[in-house]
Each structure stands twice: as structure tokens, then as C-alpha cells.
View 1: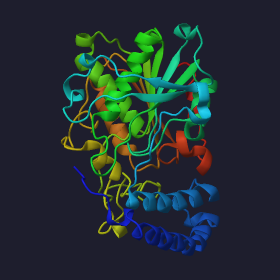
View 2 (view 1 turned 135 degrees about the vertical axis):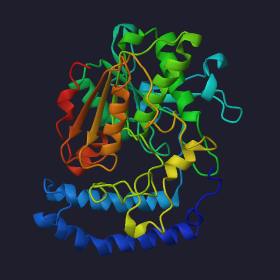
View 3 (view 1 turned 90 degrees about the vertical axis):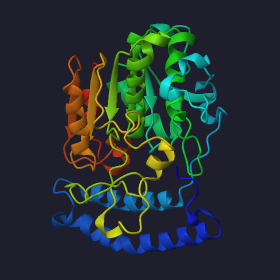
Length: 373
């Protein structure tokens, strides 16, 4: 387990580090501008100037945040979401079995945000998307400011009548909420929809991006292994957007997309050759994993296929660092008898365009493929 915060997370070193990093960022801007404006210099021949510029800037911004390594603080205060914010109590402890029965990490009360509005008396008749946000297990809250656009895509382009975006517990340095905290929360939210709101499992769509997609798959694995024992049925289907199938993959040497993505190694992506000696890999992966082995099937999806009757829709960007591994994992799952897996690769897209597409100019064609899920 990563037990200590990075040195630069402590004041006054933090402010000095961030100030220095900002200066270096500003000095890089002319270079980013040049390679963005001249097509032959762009990392990908199909990228626009905006896509090139935003991926470069986003990489270094995220790298700075990752090296400081301070996990976001969450609250159960409704905030701006007001009545759309839902508090989810802990379920009967008997449902948290196997990997979810931790002596250290106990189930806890969590929350989530409803879109487009708080559920009414007719919610049991609706198709609900249960959404798990990305952020390498260390960032994000599932609320409107960050994930309102994703909820809108599911409501407008998908077949969901409502979206419930879970605010699961985030992991962090110093042993903050390690595995299975987030996975306990996904189970709590799923059972809340089933038992408290009486929504049929066949009307629930699991969905998630990046680390959230891992949580969705891990919940499906848990239902496969323990669902019969705790009387939990499987959902309608699952939508997995750029799933982080191998959190402990760091080496960029064999990756053809190491220059066409924005995820730095300090956050949870591949460590480029030029910074490999100084970057501290995968803040999120180490914080979330805790004392579990790196190959744990609930953490590393690649190489750990399992049977599920739930149809899977898997999306990846063809220029993202994890594309090859996502496709390989999807093929592993497809190779299990009875599994149904559809894979869609967005041409020239980076990691998690469903979340960052609007900001970076990778709106893509995925939105139109959600209809009918």
C-alpha cells in the first residue's frame, strides 16, 4: 500500500512546485501552438489544431495534479443538486461477501445524483442508467458540474429514462478508502435501485467510463460469483467507455499510442520514456489497490475473463494508450461461451472521449450508437 503522500503535497513545497510547474507550462505553450497549427507536426494526422493543443495541455495539467496527489474531498451535502441528490444507506452486511467483506474497509453511506430530476412515484417503471464515473479511483463526484453532459448523452441518445450517477468513495495516499470501498458502494447503489426503489434488474443499465467502467465490470463479476447467494439478479446490459483494464501497465516502449493521449504515468497511464525516471506511476492504481495483489480479477480485468449473461458494449479510442488492451480484454470476454460483447473503436480518439470529448474536440460518433441499449 502507498502509505505516504508525495513530498510536494505538503506546504510550502506544494505551492512552490505548482508555481514552478505553471511557469514551465507557460513556456511550453508556444511549442504546443506551433505543432497544433502545422498539420505535419501533429501527433495524429487526423487531429485538428484544437485536439492537438488540448491533449498536450491536458497531459501536463493532469501530471501536475497527480504528482501532488491530493484526493478530492466528498460531501453528502445536497449542494447545487438539491433534491436530485440521493443518500444511499449501507445495506444488510450479509450482502458484502468475499472480496467485499473487508476487516479494514467497511461499507459506508454514500450518495449520488439523479438526472434529469429526482425520481417520482413512477420510477419503478423506468429504465435507469446506473453510472460510475471515471477519475482513476481518486477523482470525481458524479455530480452535475462534471457529469451532467454524460447523463444528457444517455438520456438523449440512449434508451435510459433516468440516470443515477454514483458518488462512490475515492481512494488516496495514506490508506484512504482502498479496495473494496468503491466496489462496496457500487453494490449498495445497485441494491438500492432494486430493493428500495423496486426497479426491475432488467430495467437497469450499468455504465461507466475509465475506472468507473472497471467498477461496472467488477460488480458484474461479483454478481456472477455471489449473486445467487445474496439473491441479486443481473442488470439489462453494461456500457463500458474506455475501461481501465490494466491499471498497472506503465511501460510505453511497446505502445504505438504513447504520443497520442493525455493520461500521464503519475496519474494512471503510461510513463513516457523521457519522464520514466522521475514520474511516480499510477497514483490511482496504487491508492485504490491497497494490499490487494495487482493481478486481482476485481482490479485488473485483462487476463481475468469470466462468464456473464449481461450484454457488454465496449468503447475505446483508436489513439488512446489503452486501446490495444481494451480490445484484447473484450476478445477474452467474447471468448467465454455465452458472453455477448460489442466493441466500438472511435477513429483517432483519445482516452475517455465520452467525458473529455467536448473539451478537447473529440465529440466523435459514439453518441449515436447508444440508441437501443
